[in-house]
Image (tube, rainbow, N blue to C red; front, side):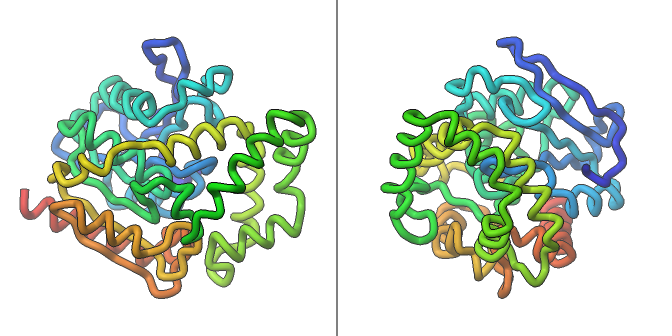
Length: 299
């Protein structure tokens, strides 16, 4: 559960009658104060932002978190084919309009970076700036784990789901209870000396709430998103953050993204993992705050 001050936790109905869950710490949006919109990664949740939402709430920022369609308290898991980056960007734009937000800082982690880039492409008037953590615009099946191994594993896993759905879904929903899987995720995705085992358990329990179909649909979106040619036109301020020990999306891919963005800064943590905002929240929070303050002073 997010630790920031919750003023409103509610649902927004989309044009196609899905219900999107959102949480905010303001009653009426104040255009004179900055607002941060947090977008989480592939089969992740707002848990990955808990240290940031608490910190920036105390600094007086307006905050909006949400569940994508098909995720957790939002509806839409019966129409997984609609779970596209274009639709997710429209959902966020419409949610911002519903809550009165006209301009916002978009923060994205991992797949959330793809969501932020889609927003910057489709709705640049909404995106005041971006904080992009551990993400890439390149086809994920070709670069994940700094290899193309997922190009072979993903189709095999998808085939197993289609051929043995009951068995596959049983394994998927119980994986968080497997101590070996918890240990592997802790060691490969996080700095295990900095992130508590309890964080991993909560994370995997939430992953099990999402069907494997959601994972494969969004993995395909991350593979097929065609946005590279648009990045150089995204002139809003951007901060690209990564961890030197990111085993999932290596730093050279994040640097490539930063090089294409015309108004970007970078920040890489020596012992940071794929989730540096959980490894070293104090350092990440201070760097994001500096970035936001610098952008405000230039406005």
